[in-house]
Length: 362
Image (tube, rainbow, N blue to C red; front, side, top):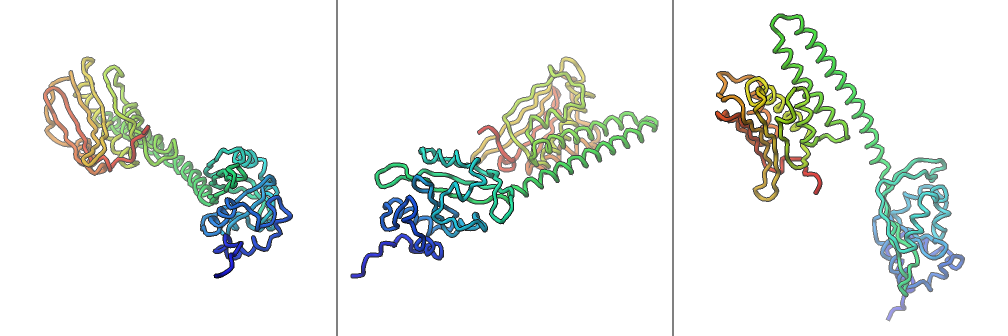
């Protein structure tokens, strides 16, 4: 029968396992390696056989034991095996010390993309980490340290930061371009005879686009909440708030859906002010939407006019009709119906709920 190996828990540890075996633990608060509690040995075995970066911080001196995957986190720092955690991360201890103390008090902490100024390559650098400090207990059930599982997210955060800068610059350029186009349209059509109605329609469409673009880029998302889309599309018009009822859950649409819906609302509002419910003080428009989940879940958007003049289908279909009957449902991957009911125009957009970006507030 083979002899029992007291260092069984170092199996699978590779070079790091050898480093643990070669460390003089008697000089630390952990004491000789053979006398370690079973709880510590078990945790050491667990991290040595894991490909996820992890370090054990144990004992009153915060003594450190790490696995192979943790080595890139350390960089070129002096050998960390068996050293106090506060000494290893001295330059960042003012930031992480209180988190470590909480772990020793029994409180776990999880933090994403935590910024730290560290020195691991002979120079100070800003790095970001997502990590969890989880309390560890000894064989008697007392908290004896914590497990640090960590992954560096510096590259991800830097890419996000660069993206925000580029998006801000793109937003600025697009706003300038829309402003220039609006000015050109305004100045060009102002001097042409009988171009007033065309000028007004074009400026309203450009304003609806500009307002929706501001919504899309304002919070860093390539998407927008329907409430904001509706408000932005209606803003160029003089419709009284008392004549409008806008209701529906918080739902976020994709960029393409937001832009096409904003243009559709602008066209519907323009038509209503000229010929429909908003052309008279007695008229009213109900704008609502809903989203249901499930196997047959669907998204519905409706524009319903009441109390206006009697409605009849137009003799010809222009850009606005083409937009709301074909372009918008195409962008939503669904279908649309424009109903010229005598009591008022109704527009209904329907699509599968999976075509929508997200429902908020759940």
